[in-house]
Length: 446
Ligand SMILES: Cc1cc2nc3c(=O)[nH]c(=O)nc-3n(C[C@H](O)[C@H](O)[C@H](O)COP(=O)(O)OP(=O)(O)OC[C@H]3O[C@@H](n4cnc5c(N)ncnc54)[C@H](O)[C@@H]3O)c2cc1C
Image (tube, rainbow, N blue to C red):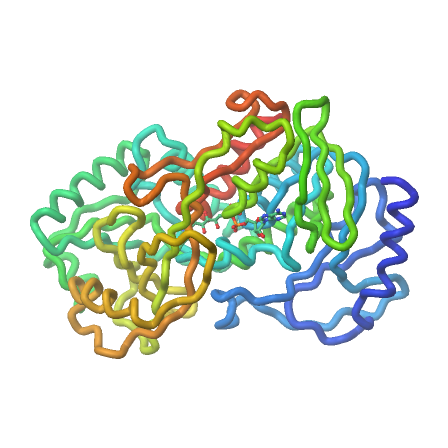
């Protein structure tokens, strides 16, 4: 880092930092300008806002920083740097995991995030399910990375103390046609390498879940739930320990590819220029826009973008189920399923609503359809039992009338631009697959 940047960074601190020792809600990661060598500084930034799933409070914390002589409180600043090994655009769960993987392989890595916190978009708006990997076609990236990611994620949870539960899920058939589909799903899952799949009769299901109505079910024992914010925090922490730097409020603005290095410009009121030999576009819903802003990137490699919103409705009272309950999948999504969070709160969703612009409002009247769908497998659902909760938006690369598509992970061998990886269409099971996607990305550029 140049002396100019280092000076500027230090000079920004006193103006923007919160008073030392103030009680702060959220996770704060200290910045230590004195220790800021050439990208060997600790990751900095702060986790200020609490996304929807965090509101029940399982993963927020409030603490007091010790008073220190140096500038020990976090701030959000745009930083300026000249040359780094790797830049990741987007600090969702996948971008953070990529930064961790690159940093752990010795790359000086910067993560650019446009918001003032990591993980506030799709990574904060999903079912928080650790999928087993049974739905996806054999040989697809989704199948491979989900099955691998499932194992990596459980191991990571164990070593990093992340709250999770291997609660299992039941995919329920409510008609003969559905029963045939269950058999297909089991075969598909087993060919993908999923373990712990078992077809259950109606009686066996009743023994597990007495209030569930179905004619048969497929039990997936390796499906579970996870505290996605705890996961992102732990991934971020690992990345920090390996020297990664998170630049919040630092939107990627434009760049160019094709030279020896990739050139990038980021920032809002102040901008910074970066040179890097590796760039990972993990911008989620905006990945196509980011790719289009890279001068020299061939337009034919930017896929179309479609948005499919998934609305959730919460069930205020406790539900009588201990497994996740899914119907057989529907076009565009996995069907209106019941998921439980780690606090035992139940929510139903997501449905599939095709939209053209990102919009996170949840319409109360869409709940009407949910009642009939949920009552197919839980007839005791009471009228008025569901309340609008939150929604997430699937970053799709195929439209409502198209066949489902795979993750599109483009490395240099696809588009011919050295050092660049684009991640398009990272919808479900992206959370489950974050660690395996990161391994895959690293293998494409290192
Ligand atoms: C309704 C729904 C339910 C889901 N359920 C599950 C599930 O149960 N299990 C599962 O495995 N997966 C699930 N998923 C999928 C999972 O949530 C996503 O695959 C995953 O969160 C994607 O992470 P990401 O980091 O790619 O994207 P994001 O979390 O969207 O992160 C992208 C980041 O890029 C930033 N960004 C964008 N543009 C710029 C820019 N110009 N400059 C800087 N930063 C930028 C954004 O601000 C954002 O922080 C679900 C998805 C949806 C929509």
